[in-house]
Image 1: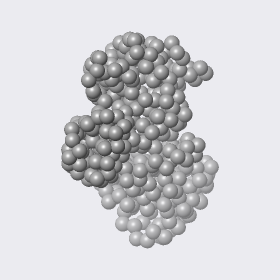
Image 2: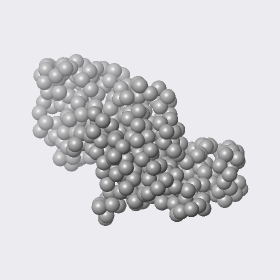
Image 3: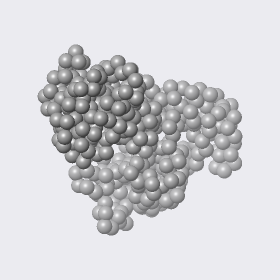
Image 4: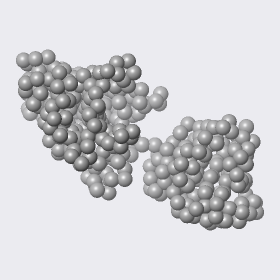
Length: 396
């Protein structure tokens, strides 16, 4: 589950990570009030107005602006709220901005120049261990840094038996070129960040940038946290942070029925039991000349209710002109799935696109017979080749 920057900062603060002060607002009046409160707390007369969407690259898209007066806070908030913010992570359609974060100015004069770093905590799937990835090139696209100057990206692997150790935090601070107070600050910042990653059951914590202020404090200026959906039962407070306006309506509906669904841009909808088979099904669709319109895994307990819910979700996409249901009858019998498809079809009513049902495994022949004798616009297949040929024929 993705959360907003201001929500991520709230979580980080719980674990002792220093973050920049900020107050969220959803209208210009509240934005001005937030700016006044920040001024009283931090003594600053400069603020940053930051769009809150689930995507990076907001600054380049015009979603991060500096305000040097309360009038500018109001004007910039008016400009940003309601805009369709397009970044390299949103796609050309962009995302609507419904909230802004009024943040303190952290680039103030002091004894040294501020410096920006990149830091993230995530799982390295090659080693099976968590790593802290960091770079001196904060504030930039980390993908570009990795492609053009990979030697500027460091990785610190964490042993799950010990967690992050003091010498590793010191090595990170050293590699970032820090010394004195800033060095000590970073050795506190790194363990706190790792503790937040583990404590929140995050799959990713990314801070870009981590800032060394002019008075040598280390703080998170940004906060991107992805939370493991499977761990949300342990974090009711984090689950409440879910912003449905940031998600695809079809994916929201799928989650209500415990379906694993991801919207894609193709023309052939697919419904499968098992993630591996779902990936293979999408390959079949592409090899047949179509493009998958979605990833949909109904799990091992496919029945009339889940099939009906899945079909409705797929059919809500106007780009779909055929549906491929690919079921392996292991835990679930193929004849039960076939009956589920027939029942769901009748409940939904008129379905204008053809449905191909490929059944293999327990009672596959019986399932095929049910489909063939249903009298509906449903085509049965037993082998992958049969399903592939039908897709090619019906999509062409």
